[in-house]
Every structure is written in C-alpha cells, then in structure tokens.
Picture 1 (cartoon, one colour):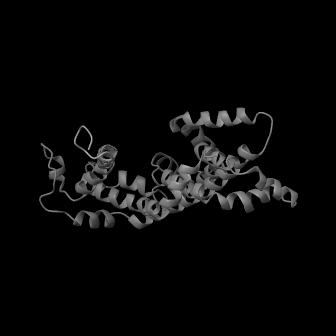
Picture 2 (cartoon, one colour):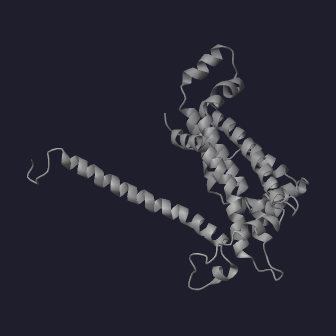
Picture 3 (cartoon, one colour):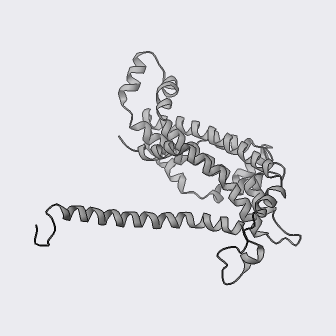
Length: 287
C-alpha cells in the first residue's frame, strides 16, 4: 500500500481512466455540436409553419408532420432535379479526381525548372474566394456558348482542383522511388507508370478526393443558379427557390423537409466510402 492507501499500480490506472473520461466527454460534446444542426433541420421538417415561427422557440413539434416530406417531394420534380445534380456531380467528381491525380503525380515525381514556384502558386490559389473568379468564368462560358449546358463542369473537372492536387502530391511523394525506377528499367514511360503503378495504389486518396469533389458539386448553389436554366438546374437551386407561397414567402417547413432529403445522398456516399476517405486523409503527407 502507498501513502494514499491505494495499491502501487492503481495511480496510473486512475489517471488513465480520468484521461479517457475527459476525452470521451470532449468527443461527445463535439459530436453534439456537429449533429445538432442536422437534428434541428429534421425537427423543422416535422413542424407546421406556425410552430417554426413561434416565439419563444418551439423545440418539439406537437404533432409530427410526416406529410411535409411527401409534399416537399411531390410539389416539384424532385427526382428530375436530383438526376441533374447527380449527373453534374459525377461528371465533375470523376474528372477532377483523375486530373488532380495526374497533376499531383507530376509535382511529386517529375523534375522541371520552376516546379516549386508553380506549386506555391497552386497552393496560393486556394485562398482565392469563388466570387472573385465567378464573373470572369461566366463571361468566358457565355462567349463560348456553354451557358445552359453541363460543359462548364467538364472543363472545371479537367482543370483539376488545387486542394486535391495537394492531397495527391503528398501521397505520391511518399511512395518509394524504387517503384518507378524498376518500371523505367522495364521500359515503362511516366504515363504507364502513373496509370498502372501509382494510381492503383492511391485508392485511399482517390476515395477521399471523389467524396470531397462530389460534395463540392452536389452542394454548389451559385454556379448552377448562374449558368443553368430552370429545367437543367440542380436540386440545391430547386430547394432554395421553389418552395414559396404565391406572395413569394418561403415555406420553411417544406424547405427543411426537402433539405433533409437533399442531404441523404451525401450521407450514403460518405458511409459507403468512409474507410477510404479516412485512410486517404490520414495517409497524405506520411513518408
């Protein structure tokens, strides 16, 4: 027994339990902060307009209005807008993932004058707000006759994304140099090295990049609103603009119900690809 009356090995165990308790308390608190807004969105979709406008706040609905979800689905061409969003998101996500992987491979494995300067400019471009480039981008696509088409998302996808290029560059830089040296000895060029050796090994980063890019495009409101007509527009635009009264007032409970259904595809994609997403975010930058 020690002076405190505890067994000799009990102090480290008590300290470990206290540390775990503190850690779990912090994690549960942070989880509540992140889940809270989504929970409030679900509750808002189950209320009447009067309950949403009530003061003080009406936390729980008196009667759960499940009909709000059916009304939100039927009042607009929900599946049609969802199809448009899915097409745009898939086009952009697939193309930008592959193009970013190719650019990241070049920065990681090839040598050229000014490479570090170009990479610094690329990283610096991440600090530019989207609004700065929105008007010039619109004017370019308008001159090319690509307004009200999906071609802008094709070109955005082919242009790569700075953040995704950074992820791939960090991952490819950590792979052994012997891989490409052996391939070069066997007569492979850098194109074949990328497609047959480096890209198959980068599935964690590919998963993470695809989820990130899909989320960017699926959640984008400004570009579809600016470039597409109503028939070709996306679900994000429809949710924000079509649930209104004859006087133009938003029907907030239907907007909330539609927003819940709008978020479901992203949650499903993340749940399916979460292992690759977490692995991709954790392995980039590790040598």
